[in-house]
Length: 261
Image 1 (cartoon, rainbow, N blue to C red):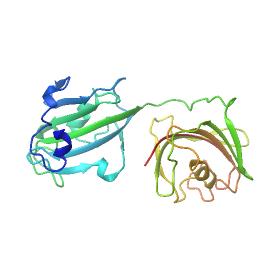
Image 2: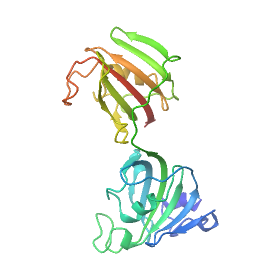
Image 3: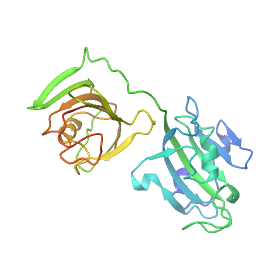
Image 4: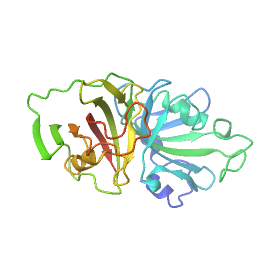
């Protein structure tokens, strides 16, 4: 597919077979969406978050100025906050999870007469965008622990695996994308959660962002995994910058692993 060749210098403005695909859609602002693969579901609205891969390039010569694939890190983007150009923002209003598209973005919907960084003024742009998921605010889920596999990994560290997840599992240096809910162990009071604002958290394993007990569990639970861990004072945060979570407080942590890179 010429789309792949474009990343290494193909000079066509869009993939050669883009017009042969099921659908091409032109938005009122002039942005053209060429569908490579169509997903399903509903588009995000302002205030929600999307997980996507995005490669941006200049239309005139296909030179790449931004690539989440090269960075090996998917973007978690807050829709409606204007941290990408207007052309991409407008496309996100109509794209649904699973969509893979090429976007032709006129300069007026890109970075205009000012340009930015490696993008000269008045540059028409191309974007290859994969919309992976839409995350919406929700209450922390109530998992069924009746069939969960319980393990006592070591003193002060109890784990209930609701779902194992796929291998490979996380290792030091990996970044884990997850939803979480943290409860005070003594009375199950909810202290902090990523579910209520809809934005998953990206954590790097091996640098102390996780409590030690949680890091150990992640080495045994892969993408798609869901688990609850009860950690003692020795297995929880030894230093905490969160006012609601003092250091060495015993905790119950529910975690859903959305991705590992």
